[in-house]
Image 1: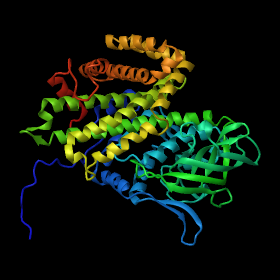
Image 2: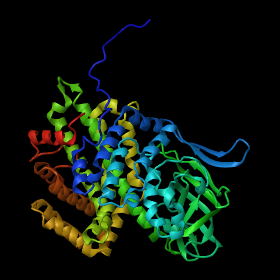
Image 3: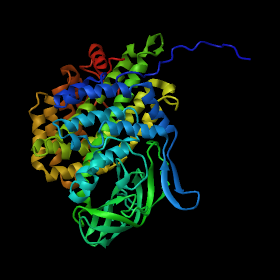
Length: 549
């Protein structure tokens, strides 16, 4: 027998059936400002679709029903296939349909990079794992364009907006996905220690055919139709295009050893593989594999920034939605002063992250402009370090807003929290990014000067002071600069975010952000806003951040 022991009350309704795009003022304003307004109507429709109950459930399903590896078929033949739940393919269908794998190369319109970043940012709020093959395909296109003959054979399939999940030779596919294979057991980020070798099969140098023998410790998305791989020739590390199927129609001997059992990003199949004379075509100059593929890494790092900014945005909306519906101690959480301080602080952090990712995307529109080149080459790795790392604390804080309800897997917050670390690790961990920022500064002193000049010309005394402090830190001996690289990069990113907030957000909100991030007593823990952040300003920040469906 069962009887009613209590009435269910004070539980927060599910956040669903809302327009993810239309509720984001910073994103909508940034789109118009960056000459990407031509894509606004499409993003409005996309935002409504992504916020629907049905699409939000796809993210949950793809992370519940994990990829399954089949190394052999039932007869004992090597198969090396990975099966995915239908939700995975539905998510990739959306990504592909919206052109998020190739838009700037296919559209070639002013603002296309920003339009694509905005769409990627929206879908990132639904599910993260399916972004991996999309990002790698997007970033591979400029690399593949360096080989006209190969690119001509792939172009239509790269640009196709139809998702084709079939495991077939490229010539038989309607569309293709491209992955990456760089790191090995002994080296990790130190790819110069790679031992995989490539022996000539037909010809020598770029465009020639080789056979690869070795392994990759992290081989992202093994069901992609081809991968860009680093392998060693007599001239050093070179870059190779390695398809799943050889030109003669036989399976390329890329043997999947196992799938990684990861903390998060569960829907995406990361793998370990071995090459047994695997067929590949050299891309770029022989011995110049790292410079060849570094352009790809610059783009994937930007997507790490976009993905982390999106994760923060979605966690924020969930936290504010919860606080506006949940009562404690006789009042809604959102009406309590300390909770309002926490939420307003999170909202400022999220907006600053959104502005920075839009700025970095817009910098790709002007590759010949020295200042925009500096934003791309110096600030992108800095943002990758800072935004991706902040996402960890940010999602944890938003989970705490939910209390115990946030810590259980039946809600979305646990998944966001488990997703947060991957972007900080993938494509170079924090130390790697900070050292890359130092190298970029040394190689482009003019660009660094232009960036600091923007701060010095700001009407904010705090930003001017940060520019002076940065110049002082940069004048230290090389070993000290390296030791203090994280402090330097943190200061640089916060200063540039403050500049963007000053330029594009409401004046009062920008002042609170700059004040809190430049004062050692503020901004260390979310919810410690003081000074300019009175109750009225905090409420205005929250209304801008999330008007609510």
